Image (cartoon, helix red, strand yellow):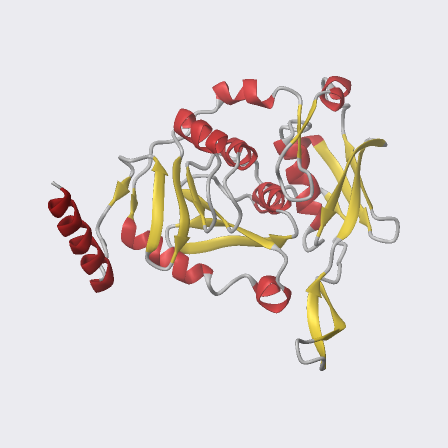
Length: 297
């Protein structure tokens, strides 16, 4: 699966938004302090003057968010369909114009499933049925590369470090971060990256998707639609997310931080070339457990 090349004639508003703001708070001693908090604002998407959805977003890359949302929900299938994306923060709206009315628009709007995504994500139409068409490449990744990538990802998360209250997602290749996005909801961040892949002409070949959020069915579906076969998360996994990952052949690594991770799927895809030595404390605990079992028997 190859991404559309970036179109130079696409009209974008390039709307800027403040990502954090300073507020006065009192600490546990009753002393006044200034801290940064993440901004959150509504953005209502209109497709050819039809209201589609209102997203709660940080607003760091709104045009890419809107494009990625429409792409992942099946409203548009190619960047060539889009004429313009105009974001206006004064009215908190994004107007998208396409060359033609998307097929089955009314049906998609009537078939909504509210998901567990932060800020109430939605899935339109019969996206689950379309997953049968997804063919992801078979990949192999090295454990040492995973550790190097996790280390490199620590250089990002600027809004989180400054204010907290946001999720971060990234498109990665090898141990390098190709694109990184933060937003108040992880589904917004993944949609923004989907849009950014189209806008910047980023190929899906050899890519890894990273998120600080949990790997739910919605996350797995969206990343599969983007053509990416490896999911890496700092958080956990849901039952449906795991079932879909196994069905689609996605390698899923979760609870990943430092030199620790749990591999939930894609057992044959990981080359274990950097297995950490067992910590002394773990060895003692293991030995104690073995002696206990021997005593019981």
